[in-house]
Image (cartoon, rainbow, N blue to C red):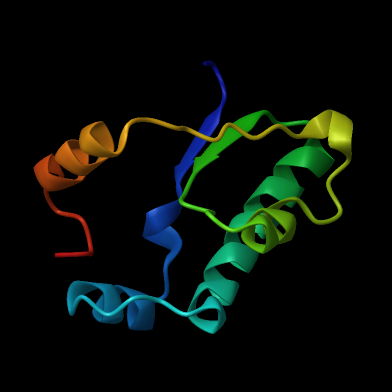
Length: 101
């Protein structure tokens, strides 16, 4: 794509990684510092005119709102991937080295 790329999961605080590794779902409160960190990256890019892609699972509207807060509409886009449950489940089963068991 010729732009900056950030895999959002690497920005989780250690406490989130520990919870996920133990199979404990994150709360909205757990996710907030992570989402703010990703927002800060996107905001910096928008201010400097840098194009970039951040991948993350911002499943709730309020998570996506945090990510784009203060970033002009003409400087942001989002892609929400959809697929059949069976396909998504099989891909999740094939993932290696991710935080969740």
